[in-house]
Image (cartoon, rainbow, N blue to C red; front, side, top):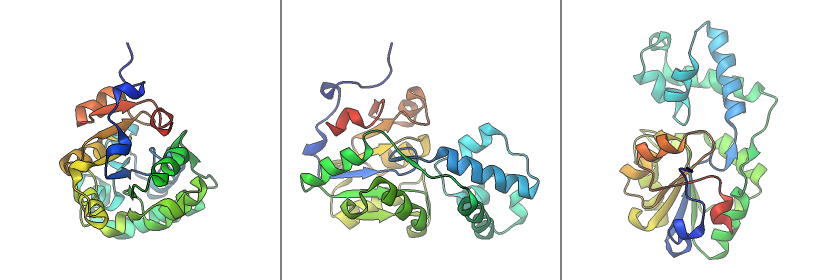
Length: 225
């Protein structure tokens, strides 16, 4: 039995909402291969053994500096921001590009055409956001971006989503959010976003629902029309 919403009738009317908020990595662009390569290169350069489970649970979809501060590990003797700068150096050296998620550009264009504002709420740094939106071809359609530099506490804390709603002048309960990770879903739900829609690109439907997703879709084509 499928564990995701397939038909339009399964989902709320996105176009009746006041804003559409999107995570970036894994939701709009498939960049997991890029980030995984960069993080593995960084860990190897430091001689740190980090399991796939630890990477997936504590680094994927989160701000790296936050994880360095909070998670026990060999990094605790080092400055978190300096470590993140190292990671970004490794990211810049990766000869790979993010790939648009199916339906992502089409959905943003469709939402923008109605006059509804679009926000990107991400744990990524702004330079990565700009390059990814360029790959998608929708940079000029995004009303506001909340990136890692804009918040004190990243996902799973709700600060980024609350900031996006303030910038757009909308009530969180009148906004829809699209997320692919449990940390992102947790953040959006904690901000009072409704509906929060999980996208099956990096995380199982069961995990997204357990984190609080109101709906789960196979990919963005379901709502892109």
